[in-house]
Amino acid sequence: MKSLVTGGAGFIGSHLVDALVAAGDQVVVLDDLSTGRRENLAQVADVIEFIEGDVADRATVDRAVAGCDRVFHQAAVASVPATVERPVATHHVNLGGALMVLEAARAAGVKRVVFASSAAVYGDTGAEACVETAAPNPQSPYAVEKLAAETYMRVWADLYGLPTASLRYFNVFGPRQDPSSPYSGVISIFVDRLRRGLVPTIFGDGEQTRDFVFVADVVRANLAAGALDAPAGLVCNIGRGETTTLKQLYGHLAALLGGPPAPHFGPARAGDIRDSKARVDRAFEALGWRAQVPVADGLRALVEAVQGT
Ligand SMILES: NC(=O)c1ccc[n+]([C@@H]2O[C@H](COP(=O)([O-])OP(=O)(O)OC[C@H]3O[C@@H](n4cnc5c(N)ncnc54)[C@H](O)[C@@H]3O)[C@@H](O)[C@H]2O)c1
Image 1: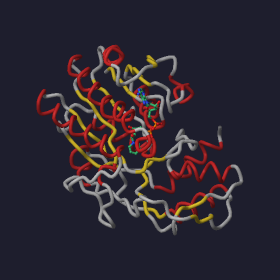
Image 2 (image 1 turned 90 degrees about the vertical axis):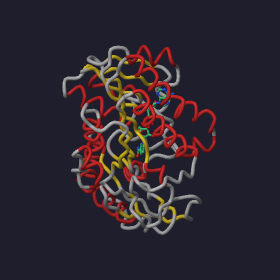
Image 3 (image 1 turned 60 degrees about the horizontal axis):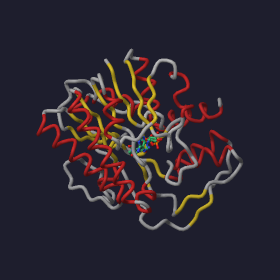
């Protein structure tokens, strides 16, 4: 099997590349290295084909997709603030790139496209768990771009019989997540500050919740969705279906890394969603997928990985 991973030098994409290589796939990575890093692919550099280029450029995507059986489309400007600051540019990458991948995949006879969507498409659902049948309510250009790209995925399945699957990731965490990005996962920022002997700041009262899912589980979800018998046009949540408060998260990390018992608290950030939790029934029914790594185990693995570097 030959697979293209767009955004394969990034946090999630590079773990997916490792897993595909381990499974015996021939792997092509297309990445412009805007936030991704070649070091993330160091251990597989000799066995993959790496194409540095733009996922919104048709000729580049055509070259990358040639001969591939499936495409895992992870490339995006994965930052809500960046999409607020530069919506035209991020629309070009996040939506234009998805369309380009679909068109190139269709022309190349690819058998399945798996798309990295986001829980951001739901907007603020209050304390309710997000369920795929709920009406989406995007509240940022990022969420609009993800939702529109998902819609293209479904329509390309219907129009052209190209099987697609959109996975709505919740808060993914794990090694290689870059703490320096302005919208990096809170976990990578807390780990980075604690390791440098600094006290992290929680914006708000710390009782806000997130559904954190370990990157290895997200990789497994992609592999399941990349299997050729998953339903075409599928949209499904990829989360644990349980929440952790930011205070609890801080407690876990402070215990692992030796931080002070309490973080700093700052003013709540405008537009921050209070609670986020996935309903995960569809992922189990459609993909046989369920998250396996408890948050505490994932945090321990992350801390071990960063301490080993
Ligand atoms: N990390 C999360 O919690 C999370 C949650 C929901 C959805 N997602 C989605 O998952 C995917 C992977 O996110 P990540 O957290 O690994 O972020 P990341 O920034 O580490 O990975 C994105 C990759 O895409 C590449 N890229 C960006 N623009 C490109 C372009 N024009 N052409 C080619 N490559 C380009 C980057 O260089 C990077 O390697 C993204 O689509 C993101 O929107 C992530």
